[in-house]
Amino acid sequence: MNEVVETVPGPVQRMFAEDVASRSLGIELLEHGEGTARLRMTVTPAMVNGHGIAHGGYLFLLADTAFACACNSHGPVTVAAGAGIDFVAPAREGDVLVATAEERTRFGRSGIYDVSVLRGDEVVAEFRGRSRALRGARPEQP
Image (cartoon, rainbow, N blue to C red; front, side, top):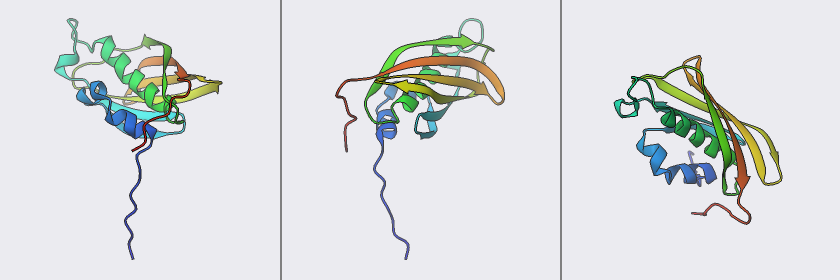
């Protein structure tokens, strides 16, 4: 007999479902796990700047969203304490970008995460985020 098992969304799915900014840009959550996440975004005409390349703010937003998914995978509500990005190669309209976030370390309520943004096998940007779990904050339960 086949039994249907309902799964309750975890903290990452709940957070991403409420992230109107990221979802309105077409960002997709491909996968996530403890301290990791992989997201995808296609560069649209509205994301291209006056030089004909993707505006860096959109690349930062994609990387920051992957970072948020990775650092919130542990449960407590976690926010960015700081972040930086290095742009390695330009992205253009129609490019499909994948951001992969990986936890480097967690200590106390803080953490460090690296995110690589790629177009196929080519690195477009490298992002490093520093996280801070909010004291006493827990994600909302369904």
